Length: 147
Image (cartoon, rainbow, N blue to C red; front, side):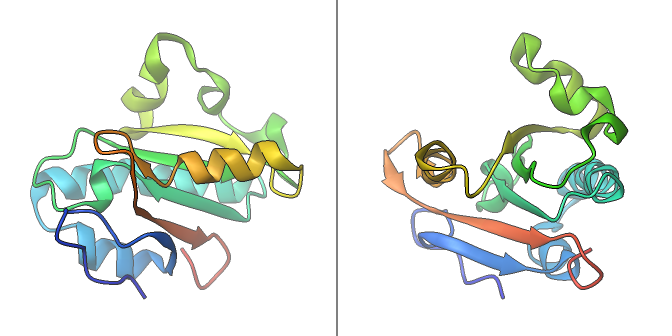
């Protein structure tokens, strides 16, 4: 369940498990956000088809911003058949412009269980870079219940 947004506009610190319907209900509140959700859904389908088990969603999309620029996502690379992913998931040039064009958001691979680097990456994903304070992110399991 997604907790209420904190007074600063962010989710409370932590990793909050959600289902796709919960994410849509909470953050698909206007046409612009529904457009971002459409891109996000297409990315999730591609990731799940390649065997990705888990994603984390962050950025202005999971805040109170009425018109967030995009969303940010991390995907668990362990077990993913990378050769089956659209190449755009591995293209990081020009501030991930190709990812934004195709999926309306940015994607970063992370390998959990691979030591401190993965922990640091997910920890960094939970920092509001404007205030340097902790914030919450959403985790989606891409199995039958999550998508």
